Image (tube, rainbow, N blue to C red; front, side):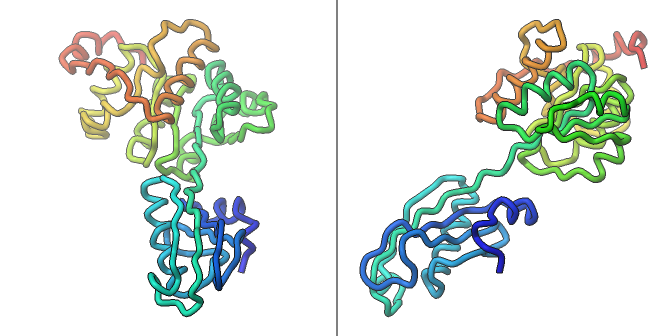
Amino acid sequence: MQSILDIPEILKRENLAAALCTVVSTKGSTPRKAGAKMLVLQNEKIYGTIGGGNLEKQVIEAALVTIENKNSKLYKFELLQQLGMCCGGTVEIFIEPIMEKNKLYIFGAGHVGTALALFAQNTGFEVTVIDDRSDYIHALKNEKINKIYSQFENAIENLSFDKQTYIVVVTYSHPSDRAILSLCINKPNAYLGMIGSRRKTEVTRKKFLESKIATIQQLNNIDMPIGLDINPETPAEIAVSILAKLIEVKNGIKPKRKPKIDILEVEKCINYECS
């Protein structure tokens, strides 16, 4: 059995939400003493033990609730009266969720993508930058930033997506942005945003609806034009506006809804859109 001390490695390998259960105090006869730990995964697999028997069964059930609601809680168990265990002592166990890492995938290693990567890695995101241009990827020297030199479509096939995944699409071309967006729109995520003007946004919505790539509801859930509306101009300012939006989503702040785009308006500008 892998040691409970290898929690980071276990979580990386299992790629599941988890809760850590720690015996914080005991009284009388108990299976384990203060300090004993058990890691419970979302699939009910455990590492370590806090004592076995009916106590462990109850703690696993409580841990699954903790994983679901993400709230820590202290539990007190009377082993004889509550659980029918002949030990007869009392044990208190603190159960806390192990928060999943917020992964940020940045498609595009240009000026905006690079600035965003540098800012975001200091705010708790696990940052990965993807680009199909070798010189741009290798220009990123920060060792805390993961770099993938690959065709965008191939990278998406090999990346893992979950509800802690933030996706930012800021490549060098409209077709690439749309292709990435179409491949990511059905992936689980916490956030999906694409850079672009209002016209680009309108045309993208029309193309996706006509091709049945996405529904209106799915399109309304995409942050485009991307970021908070602070009238950014430079790449660094645009990156700040995007990061502010990511933090807003991460911290559960209800955003001000961007106005929905009337598809009829799209018809008026579709002929003027660059490919």
